Image 1 (cartoon, protein in one colour):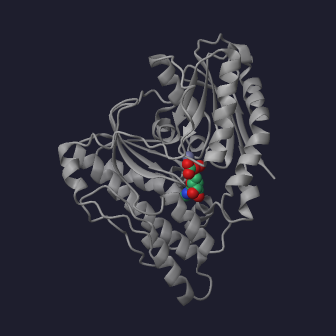
Image 2 (image 1 turned 90 degrees about the vertical axis):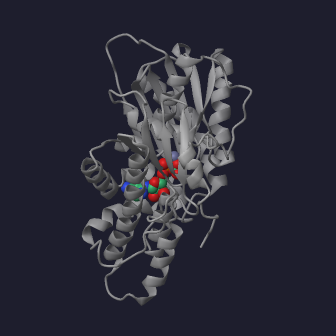
Image 3 (image 1 turned 45 degrees about the vertical axis):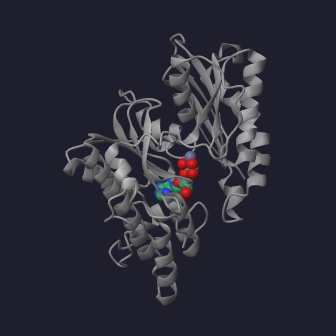
Length: 368
Ligand code: KG4
Ligand code: ZN
């Protein structure tokens, strides 16, 4: 019932370190990875997608039980694939939040226990930060001034990045996350969970201009998003349709979401005079988003870094990448910190003057 993906890398040369073992269990993927400095030695993922599919979404209790049985074998597999012995680890990292508490606790406690047993530092990593920085991983670039679009099942954020740990959240969704909207619309169309990849695969067979769906909040001055209105428009459209309309609805819905994401991101980069855009999180795997942001960035004379497809959905390599930066800067330990299901990226109160002005125009939270 579990699907697995794993990548191993054997280098005949010596390890240069630091060696970081990282663990991710914030939602329904159990993942473990080993990094040697910024070299990825292994990345193993055990996905519970097929288990949760019959419920139409992630069931927290089921997810945590599965993490419990998977985390230890997966850590062993990641170490074996990396040809690293457990005593060679310099630091253990695990996702601290945000996510499902009972799922987070499995990887976080396992990581802490291992770090204590090995007498090594433990680093708790913010899952959103890991997505945000993932486009820089395995590239020649270090995290630098950029506008980061993070689009996943739980989050949709536009962030001004000024280097590792220096983030200003410019805006976010006021209702559904982009991935959540993909999953809900897929459900309305009778497609299995998770719906994002299903819609992505179906959309090229449909006409993206067939149904004129709304582009909420594109004309606004702020950098917030709203996706539940597009989902509701699909819900009211469906009973009126006859024949074989699923691919056309999938294509039109995807086009609307991608259009909003691209326009808001380009607007943020233009407004703040930032030349580099990054896109990360599960939805950044979407082929239409990757294509359209590429075209828009070129037209705007900017650059874009897209997370590598294997690093878009939840994985432990991105957790290890953040931990490497933290460990190099300050090899302290987070043993005293608890997992936090509501962890935020922080720094939202460090908005620049112009952004603070925009803040006054932000809409009140609305859920349709
Ligand atoms: O980053 P992620 O694995 O988990 C969270 O941190 O939430 O993102 C999962 C989300 C799901 O909503 C899934 O439907 C969406 O990413 N997703 C996609 C694609 N692949 C995954 N959405 C659109 N197109 C895709 N190709
Ligand atoms: Zn994620």
